[in-house]
Image (cartoon, rainbow, N blue to C red; front, top):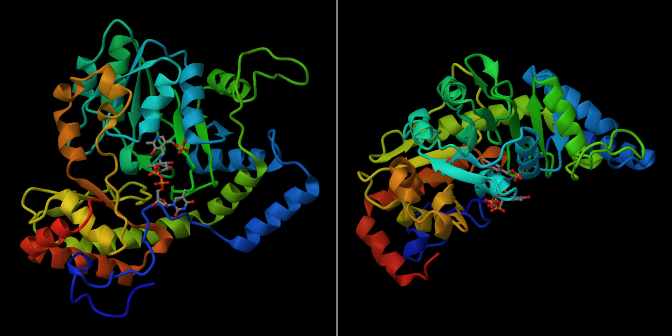
Length: 403
Ligand code: T4K
């Protein structure tokens, strides 16, 4: 996959791309293929493919035990899990969320005609700033949805204090934070409930999938009904519901992945440290830090490009893409700058200075089982070469079609 030749010339200046195949940020982890195939074969023999089958039940129990949480309700994806959770909590009117997140956080609310109101983030943690949240509260506010971005926990106690003071419900989009801990407790145990995504691009995936986890028995009962059309036994619908069910094949993937979790996290940890060591002396670049006294999944390699770096963030991205390193600008430009929100609140950016600043400087590098130390060294070599010749890079970029 790596071209043998050392990088004499950057691809942007006419050299051969450093990688023959594209290197992605979100390459799925597979786990033990034989175990997965055995499960799928059993499922085919059993002819039970969906509707809370044995694999989904086993998966939910295993997630409950990994997280030390009372209830896991597995779902078809993280977005539907967010929609069902907010609905089950009775959120309406306005809910405060960060803008610096994947668009699904905001869309899950707007889809139900709940207005997502964007609060600013702390520039150090990239997570909701409780002071900014408090400023955005209006008489229509019913809840706060924090996002543990990159798997780094929100200021849960700061947000809880704001929620308690104003009588608001607090929940978390924990899509990035599966198997992370905070203050010694596993993510999944904070707020009224927390939502995970097990999408293919997450370090732990069920192809597509998600879950709501909670310690609240009543809320769990309601969510179980809602994700299955409101059915309470045969022919008895007692609630309005939708179809949020996880399939058996997805649960089979999840059960297999759970058996390989430690290995996935260890690979992520080694990659994160390899990037950090290799980049530590490059002026103007820094990788975000994880609190390693807690459990981290290290799934995102997030680079901040400061004005001291010799290239702009977007120039660096174009250099990397030319080499087949498909770094991403997650979560640029922020939800408030995307449709429909930018039309609804054209001045939202005035209240979001940290969001705008961070969204303009972050890039996410390829990670997971698809990269290894020699790949990382090569990526860092590209970055160093580009940093050493900013004028040459700009000349090269001028000759290229924009990406
Ligand atoms: N909340 C937050 C904070 C989230 O980050 C997400 C999802 C959600 C809620 C919603 O959860 P889900 O409903 O998705 O369960 C990707 C994922 O699709 C999305 O799940 C994820 N966040 C987001 C951060 O990343 P895109 O639009 O960047 O995906 P895409 O297709 O560009 O794929 C990313 C990279 O992964 C590509 O370079 C190709 C590679 N890839 C992708 C797939 C699907 C593969 O190599 N194999 C694959 O099978 O959103």
